[in-house]
Length: 94
Image 1 (cartoon, rainbow, N blue to C red):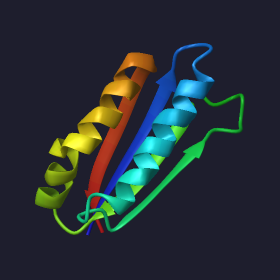
Image 2: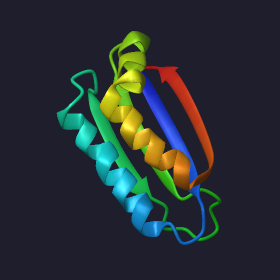
Image 3: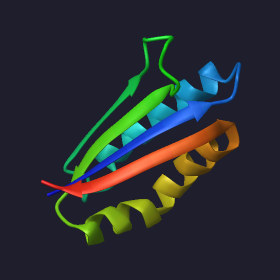
Image 4: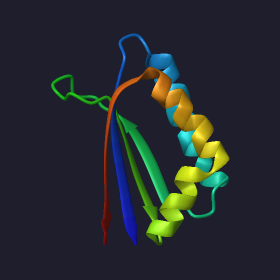
């Protein structure tokens, strides 16, 4: 099992588009069968530097690549790219 964790820092005053992005990301669970688990969250601690997180699971790295290259994921990702300042990710095996 592969865990894929991503955190984002968004531009100021982009809260509505951030929520739209996260909603779109969550809808991918119903579209991309390779997603075994997915949750997103918005940071509630003002001391933290990043604004949102994705925690997801895939059976294999190939499944993760299929997800990343899926046309619906690319659409959602493009929205994110237009509003983010930074992105960090890590993938690990459990």
